[in-house]
Length: 458
Image 1: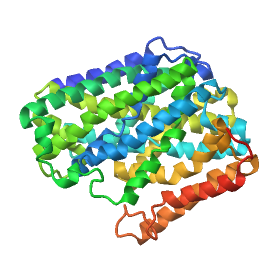
Image 2: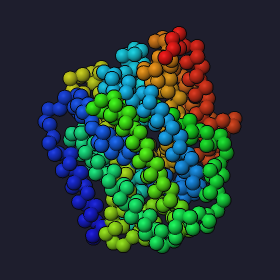
Image 3: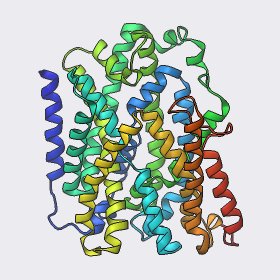
Image 4: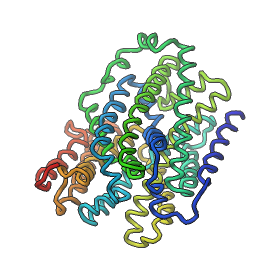
């Protein structure tokens, strides 16, 4: 009951924060980018919390493969984020466009912006985070109720509180959620150290696969995840926050600070996964290693707070992705061709549609890692060069080929993914002819860029 009261209070606070100082008639800029006045602390809080929504997937991987989690999900993203800060963040803030599709339309043509809206809508699918929330609540309640029910209820709640104030609601709730993230994992690690020993002692008890940087995987598999880190350059959440920053300097500094906080949180998550592996032994469902470890080590009250930590980490990304997908489908696609004056209202309804589509997607791919892998492998190759070309003239394409640079790489990756799935031994076998689907898509994108780029340099 104590844990339940803590969690119920959290949901009440989210609603209060969303309604606080709500504006009845929000302008488009205010609803989508909070008036482009995001301060440095708020920028860091919302970017850091949004990037870690896949916390259960991270736990699943660290439990199974150890420190290679840091190699796959940490280092490549630090590098790409720093490059984003240096080359893109300031330029995005200086650009008048509010969204990526609008920027592509302004740089190339309307058709390019329209096609990119469809791709970005799929890219920011909230499906992985809806799945994790369903699993988390099923574990907490100990219920045999289908996870789709829990997943649907939490997703619809997120739609409700985000639609109240738009991006302003996302920022306010992210500030609360980032505090819960760090506090919860810090408490868990303190008790894990008291129970099982220091990280240096634990390290000596780990098997070789958990100590190996590659985690027992092939180089090609790991390289795909390094390439998927290019997601950072086309990530609408990064672009949205850079565009909303108070100044170009705020956007750049905010990302540098965020990388430092990510490094610290990665230490927390890797350590917790390794402690879970040694303390809990075999788990039927490794994706629940963090809640299982919390339930094992923490007393009543603290266990509820740690559940809240996991809940806040996931919901910080779910609300951002619901907002981005609703914005992309509603404002950048439907409202643009139908009712431009109703873009805010249409965005709100499209958030609901995005949640419903995400629920459908988790029925097809009931694995967080699989959802990340499929979405990243298929969509990143098509977006990479056109988006970079908006801000860096070296990558800019001729207008005539811009739309095809979106369509063809994604199509090639989708076909490769289907062929790999059909020819593989199981649903999660994607390689065809020994190649993961990301590579043919990226190769297609590079060829289009080489032969279709504008003859100018940075």
